[in-house]
Amino acid sequence: MVHGYVERVSDRIESRERAEGYIALVCFKHGPPTRQGLELEWTVHQRSDPDRRLDTQVLQHALGPLAPTTISPDSPHRSLPAGSRVTVEPGGQLEISTAPSGSVSALIEAARTDIDTLRGILAGHGLVLGQLAGDPRPPRRLLHTPRYDALEAAFDLVGPLGRQMMNSTASLQVCVDAGERSDLGARWQAVHAFGPALVALFANSPSRYGAGAGWASARLHSVLGMSPCSTTPPEDTSDPVGHWTSLVMAAPLVAIRRPGRSWTPPQPMSFADWIAAGAGDHGAAPTFDDLDYHLTTLFPVVRPRGYLEVRYLDQQPGDGWVAAAALVAALLVDPATVDRALEAAEPGRGRWVAAARNGLAEPGLRQAAEDLVELGLGRLTELDLSAPDQDLVTEQLSALLGHPAARRHTGWPALAGSGTRGREPR
Image (cartoon, rainbow, N blue to C red; front, side, top):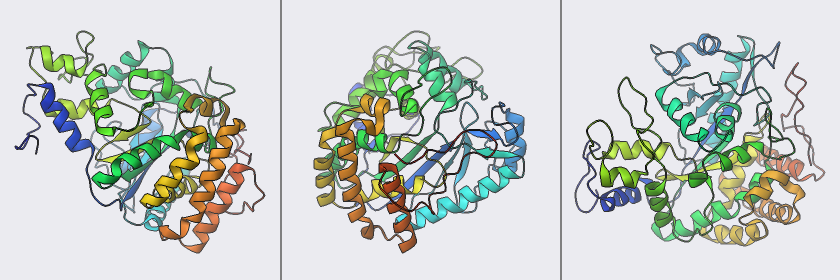
């Protein structure tokens, strides 16, 4: 309900105020912060020849009924055993999206089940998931859809980094509830404040094809540079709703969906411009469904979608994603911990580019990462994790910081036959 009435997605948006009210409603849902979810991406390789490019037919054949309709139009697109859905990214990366869970332990077990199933399916077709968040192969788009055509055209206006991000990177996204209205501001500030330290801690894309060598997270470098109007992290995080509504209204329009035609807008415009002047074949104002779609074409480091989608982390080798998911959950476990996380993150706050370039080699970022890890490890008992998983998370985080720790659980082998080494502890 917006301004006292229910909006239908087919309704035309006649004013900026109606759009802003709708954004505030759908992007920031309030309530007790109890749930978490994961989105996990990987590059995909032929085991016998990891540098060889895949094609959609190979993925279609391997995934069978799990294949999304973007590569197999008649597919039933079935879920994995624990409920995750598989999607294919523009460059052929695979992504699974878990169902949200009120238990971090249950979420980890569900993700493990589905990852193991996916790995087994791929292995039967000679395919393996990559260990790095940056693909060393030349970027090449496998999926040619109106959406990806429009995104590529928009990113190309800025430079080559958009194509790198679309086709050659793999991220780990942790999704958390926005929280009660009274807690939203602190949780929003926290996930941004500790972002650079966590980027440095989990950096796993030291290069990408043709560019970025020497970056700890070349993936985040691509993200920050592909569309700065929406990907540049906010300097002021005190007003999440105001910041986000302003960004959505001002961001360049990437796509106007039109059957059988290019989705690239007929002229440069923002969404606010579209509301004010109309666009498309008949100069019609956008609908709320158009606004919903516009929201999916923005890629900030944290994207509000009713919940908060933390998008700045590199995918991890092996089961390293467990430590990342658990650490984010632990740092947000209650308001007192959020306040302490804000304090611990201060030495690295706002240092996104330094984190992407230098990782933990930046002294301030290392200090922030160490303090955040210490805080998070102290809160693991609040997450209902099993004792083995608490040990696993402790060992993984200690390894990332270069502290002496057993690594029997970390599962970071090199990609078999690829010559690509798994990351050693710092």
